Length: 83
View 1: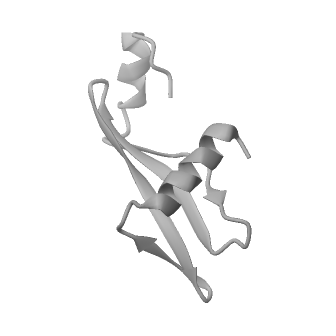
View 2 (view 1 turned 135 degrees about the horizontal axis):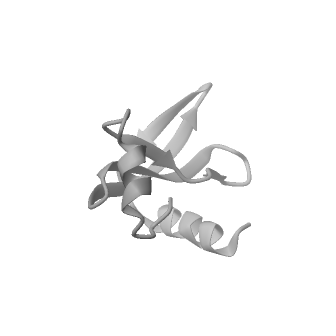
């Protein structure tokens, strides 16, 4: 997302939207049973938040995992390294 202080650009973004949702690329482990992404919610130029979403696959369904542990740290390393 553009972080420059262009007020007109920000004003135009919220003319027809109250909220802008954004998502990072999804990183998977080697056997595609776990994934990590970052989701963001922006409600104005100065009001936004983001969160890390860790997922695990159970059969054909992806479920959210609440704990941030060593596995998550490993996934962050993948994100930083671009692999």
